[in-house]
Amino acid sequence: MIYFKNPFTICSSASFSDKPKVISFISCSPAILPIVASCIKLESVFIGHNSSLKEIGNEAFSYCYNYDKTTRTHTGLTYFSFGNNSKVESIGGSAFMGCRLLKEIYIPASCLNIGN
Image 1 (cartoon, rainbow, N blue to C red):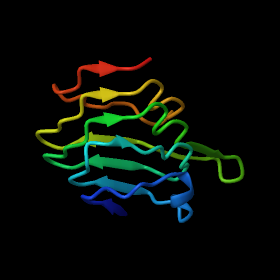
Image 2 (image 1 turned 90 degrees about the vertical axis):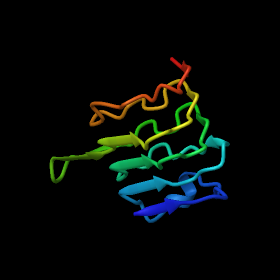
Image 3 (image 1 turned 45 degrees about the horizontal axis):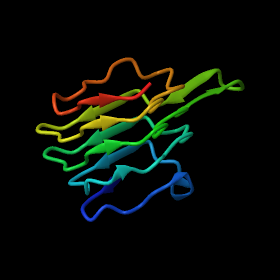
C-alpha cells in the first residue's frame, strides 16, 4: 500500500515501478490528481476523509486493468472511494476509461463537473 500525505508528492506512472495494489491519498493538496494510468496491478484507491483534493484529471486512472492469458486471471482497479467530507469538484474526462473491473463509484455531493 502506498500513502500520499500533504504536501502532495507528484507521482506519475514512472513512480509506480513497484506496481502497488492499493493507493491512499490522505490530506492531498488541491492540485489535480496526477495520472497513474495503466497501473495494471492497482486494485484500490481511497481519497482520504476531509481531503482538500479538488480535481481528478483526464484519464487519471484509465486502463488500470489487465488480463493474463497464461493464468487466465483479471487484475485491475476494483475499488475507488472518497472519504467523508470530500471536496472534489471535478472528475476529468475518461478518468476511469478501460477499468473493466470497476463496477461502482460513489460521487460526493461536492462534485459539480464530470467529464466525458
